[in-house]
Amino acid sequence: MKVTVVGAGAVGATCADNIARRELAEELVLLDIKEGFAEGKAQDMMQTAALLGFDTKISGSTADYSKTADSDVVVITSGLPRKPGMTREELIGTNARIVEDVTKNILQHSPNAIIVVISNPMDTMTYLALKSSGLPKNRIIGMGGALDSARFKYQLSQRLGASPSDLNAVVIGGHGDTTMIPLIKFATWNSVPVTNFLSEEEQKQVVADTMVGGATLTKLLGTSAWYAPGAAGAAVVEAIVRDQKKLIPSCVFLEGEYGQSDICLGVPVVIGRNGWEKIVDYKLSEEEQALFNKSAEAVRSMNDVLNAPAGA
Image (cartoon, rainbow, N blue to C red; front, side, top):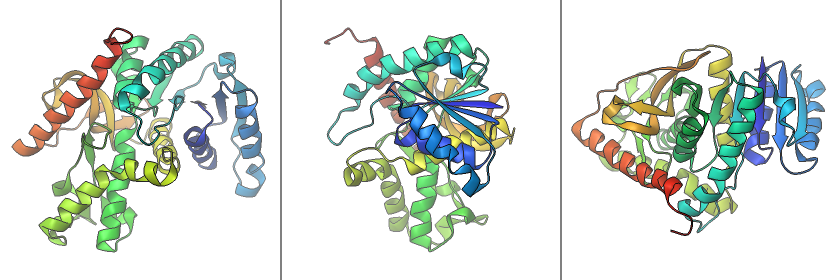
């Protein structure tokens, strides 16, 4: 098993570190455009092998995609991180060019790879990776739902005084402050609905705090978060390489599911060795479906920026 992580910045390095520690691959390649950066990160990680007890072989490469040849899974983290005050449209223009170029170069050397997209704005970058690559839809996965659901569990754990690992909670929709939909009615604490323990006001607060989870960290850190996004990317990789058939909310291409088509959006999907294998229908209420449709509209407007003339 060979895995490549493109982008050796904070998110990419954290993702790679998680992959190595869990021994998800025999070979792990870090690639970056900054001279010596990926090589340095790879060597630093390899020096933890004796301390942490893993056998994954990690190497780095400065923009040499031949080193990534025959990768089974490729994680794309490259692109500018979101900065305070930066519009998502500003992010799209720069990151679209990067993601399209990375996807093309990766597939030249690993035509059978499954691609996991972390780069922001993630829903639009996932859609771009699918459309520009021509790959079967099951081989392109945006990891936003895994991250947002983890943040949902964190907020619930804080409110309930519970272990996050005892909680099951799902976020669907777009990976954005106003587009994600934490499904509070489906959230459980060891199979018991969390709505049994939280007032309506508390439920609304948990949902609101989850939705601004990324923006809150951007404000505190001055840049995007990296520990949880990196771990979320590694969790998706694990579900693929270990063929776990895990139900993970992920950004995938819809063709009528949840009432939407020709869009990549977060829905509950089963992930295994073939990428995402099926979409699970949660039978949304009328209100939830309306929120999902509104989220899709917002993501479509982001996707439209891809096709807008330069300077428009």
